[in-house]
Length: 97
Image (cartoon, rainbow, N blue to C red):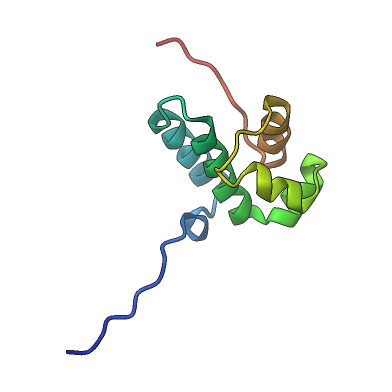
């Protein structure tokens, strides 16, 4: 039987428009259950889709710092999150339940 070639799924390859990016972040925020590192990882996926170098420049961060902040292994400070969200062209908003 021939082997089937597989490749790792990368959500960043499917985030093409600002609306798709915003919908992805919204879905991740709903599923996070308070896991801030999960949200940081989702922002990292969006940043990779937009281009890490450009996002780092727009956020005023080094590329290395951006990768570390959005790795999902740590929780970046809220000020860093706000810079990254703005650099991605997204807005956070609150809504009553």
